[in-house]
Image (cartoon, rainbow, N blue to C red; front, side, top):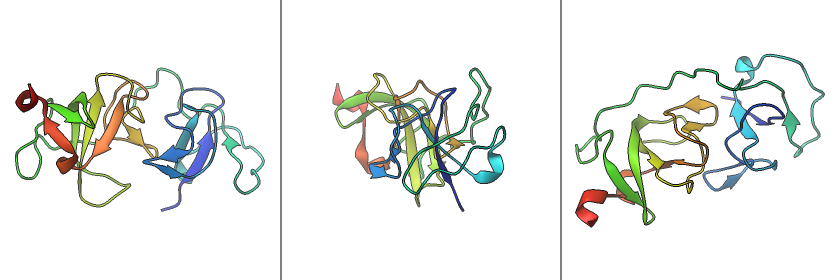
Length: 152
């Protein structure tokens, strides 16, 4: 479907227009989001010129409760479970989501990193998969993760 890249003037975004290493548009870090046109409400703004960020106030009200998508309890082969401690690129985190995603094919693992070395808050392209602090969430394929307990 169609997605709009937005620069938020109020509230909190999750990226700078780059998602999973792909540059879609430019805006300050933590101000960018993607949303489906049907999910937008509020004041209308003049369309931006091609390549320029568009500001939409009040997209994600501060403190708003967002329901996340349901997760599987374990990966398809059973080797990764929700709540499991894992290592991604040498950094430790905890598994918060397992399942299909709308941004790519196949099974993906959502991880909340212990430190702010992630890229989102559990929401990717406007879809809330899990909740964590800004810049602590990542998605990875199973083969990119290691069990933290076996690394000790």
